[in-house]
Image (cartoon, rainbow, N blue to C red; front, side, top):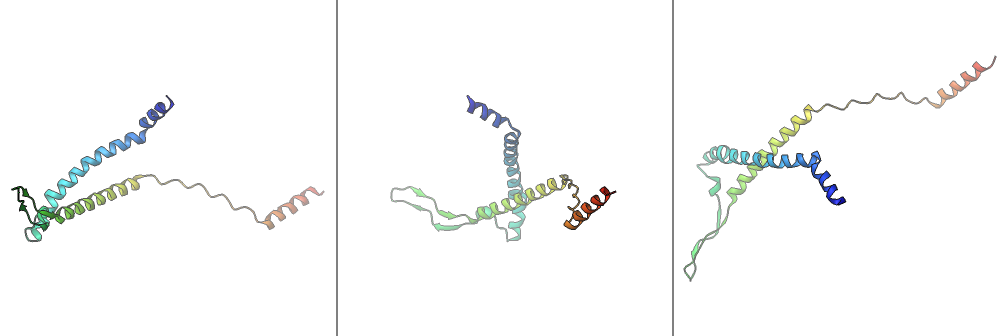
Length: 139
């Protein structure tokens, strides 16, 4: 029963709930960024490169063929266009997260520095203090 109680306390802690919310929002954000890249960034970039659709960029490693049994075998493709698109997706996501983290860090209050303690007296100052105290004691 102790382990179940520990798990319940762990699952209810704010950090786990915050993480769950972050994962859900991150998934939705990923879809938004993917749409942004696929529908807004890549078409003009493809036009600039001569009407290229990045999804169609691929190298044919083996042409499509029909087996002796009459089964159509698809071509084997190395789809580097999808890879380029994923790199652009990642770059945009990383940049946006960088900006968000930078904005969050700039809103955080800077820790108040503790007042600096005065430096400890030197040996000569301690010796002079002792001498002064001894002189005060003498009538």
